[in-house]
Image (spheres, rainbow, N blue to C red):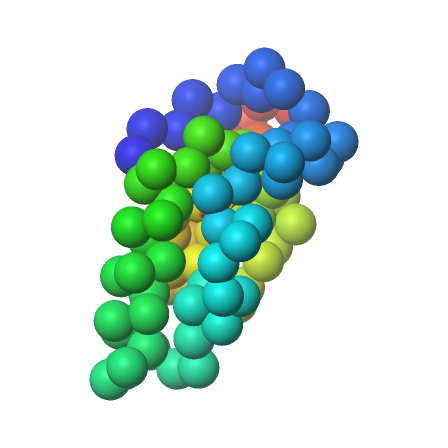
Amino acid sequence: MALTWNRSVEWDSEDWRKQAACRDTDPDLFFPVGTTGLAIDQIDEAKRVCRDCDAVSLCLEFALATNQEAGVWGGTSEEERGRLRKTWLAHRRRAS
Ligand code: SF4
């Protein structure tokens, strides 16, 4: 997934949520308990939904900017987002 770091839309307007492919899915899928066993299958399934989501970039940026630690956001797991956020924060510091 390519992050451009350039916002063309205000992600905090929440309009992106109207495009969310997960709007009608079971929220539990996106917030599995733990990172092993059944949770691995849930995370994979949630990521499959994200792959077809028009709001994936804005969702991920929102999750990084608001430090969403739990669940699948923008096609990323908690662990993946933790690593991405360090890069995202470094970029923000350089840009300001
Ligand atoms: S990227 Fe995934 S979590 Fe984010 S709105 Fe789309 S389907 Fe939902």
